[in-house]
Image 1: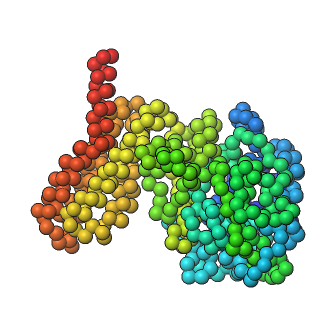
Image 2 (image 1 turned 120 degrees about the horizontal axis):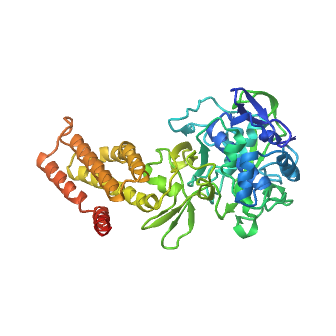
Image 3 (image 1 turned 30 degrees about the vertical axis):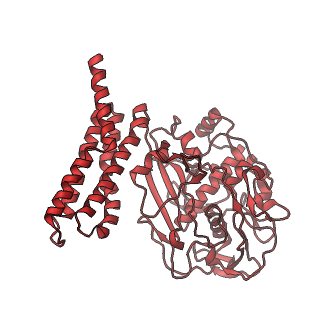
Length: 501
């Protein structure tokens, strides 16, 4: 057994680039600037774990207290706040043990690799272009890495999952990240802590403390404390500490005399009904549907997703709610114009585990014009992309082959123009003028891309008259779409306002 509070187990990097391990008490050290976990999914899990611990042990009671701590640091109060939570922060064979099912689990032991999403077998975990995962087999991991692997598995388990191999959509996590990477780690974490009440060392917060285990098939918001969203245990898992080995950890490479090789997992998992995780964005149908966590994807987050994740967005069919921590914190004075948004999680589509990470901008100046008209700009782009797809198909050039490419490249190649649009509106340009320039950029992109995929592609054989008709129809439809009519109204209103001024 070891204490997460007092034992140096957490891999970090200092301002001088030196890597070491610290105990949770040492989080106050200003020289520690980042985590240094051996896999990107464990890195994301470690951020969530620490934010959850700050939120549970050290929640500021109000906005002023939040700013006071931001400026003065965690100080000695951090260690004092951790002490009452000590019984929940032990890890090892003796129960209760951090994030593990308290009672014995029956059934055949599973290899430890199964604790990591798709780390074994033919379906290796894939990462987006920012990360590469080695294909070395994972057969033994040290207890320090096991803490993070266990937390990653539990915290990213899909909502309502029924087993350790569940393939339902997993929720996205969005964190505010400081642009100044030299800032201490605790301050980077604090950017995602919101005012609230402290948590107590009880099973309603830390479910592994429950004396009789987790027998309920469903956990509801009414049966738990709000802070349990950071410590949920949807999967019944117990690590096998009775059969350990000596050697090198297959994740971090360090030597250990207690390498874990197996765990027990009950396929009858606990279904959690979401109360709303502070670090997760949600979508809700405009027809009073349930609140559903936003799920990410390996392909990326196009700029059409940005307003919803940062500002919130009211659409015709659903509205998007930013993560509460993002919504409450990103416009705080110490953070304004100094943060971006880090979005990550598992993409479990088709039973294949993939880890995605995307960094998107936030907006320092959220004027009424930005809040009111940026969603219209996104809708204009959405309409343009759909129109391009339909027009290429109508041209009869084997659109099925090109549609997936159109879907991806459109958002990538027009992103620069979207950023210019924001800069123009934030810089004081009239909304009508900025949106008209945006419309022109979209129009030129549509014409250029359509021509390249049809008339300009020597490998494609198509009816040129059919393609010409499709092009003409595309142009006519582009300027008659609902969003184009809305833009004309905005132009008329601004012109009238100028005349009357």
